[in-house]
Length: 84
Image (cartoon, rainbow, N blue to C red):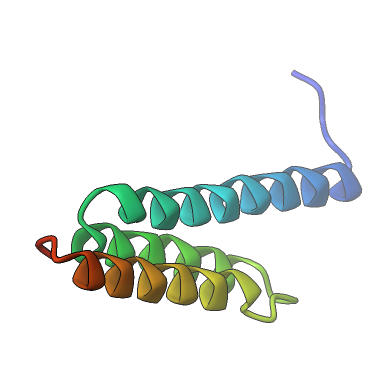
């Protein structure tokens, strides 16, 4: 098996964090069509996980997930559907 340099390992870590950030936003958006009261907290936990995995993170994904979930909750309430 090939040994990877520290720079390559950092690149793999950044790629994994990017994939998890994308998954968190995707889960939050899915909450728009399903139950936002369930999908929002799941997306929030994934976003918090990626926030603590990256020491240079500023929390943009956490904010985006919170705003998407809030919009999904408001939209669901406005349309008269069940929140949970």
